[in-house]
Image 1 (cartoon, rainbow, N blue to C red):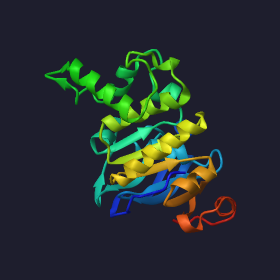
Image 2: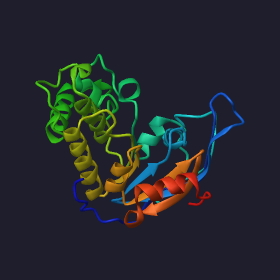
Image 3: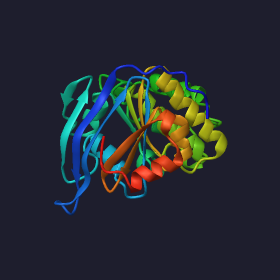
Length: 262
């Protein structure tokens, strides 16, 4: 894993007593009283077994993208916010990279340029008309800075490798200029070289003062990347480990044994 160079600052984003109800079975809590925070320049990981509620927690935070309803408190820089839609979440400085890039993160039949810019149309438009020059410029800049291997920004996304597809998703998120990044399984289904590049991108974001929330099922990845690790199981946060005390054994023990604590 690349060495971390970021310095952790003040708390940027805080979630208090957050519960999420199942979209169909409305009395069932998929996430139960979860509380956590992330600071400036910090990478926080969420680990746990399949079905622990990690993705549901993140999607519900990002503009109620999951669940029948949710309750609890969200604070950005100490101020309570109500994020009623993904648009509101983006406007308030959140970015979200889905675990399912092919179905939820990309429009596979469209080109790289369109996929990178389709969440920032307002930013790249003037008087309601897309500025084609600005769109092309932005797409080329991110292809260069994230080392997206392609002959052209007009390449159809489904023809890219998994690693390059993931970089397109990250580019789209970066173009919206979020302060808080939620990345769900950011290296799933990509090769070792592309994984390292993604790790470097996340570290660079933290170094630049961004706050990163990373869901990962790969324990070595979470241990290698995160400043702190929250452990979830059965919809609850079971505990949190500092980087210095995080081991695979400690994470598994906390997930399976520890009583809920934040």
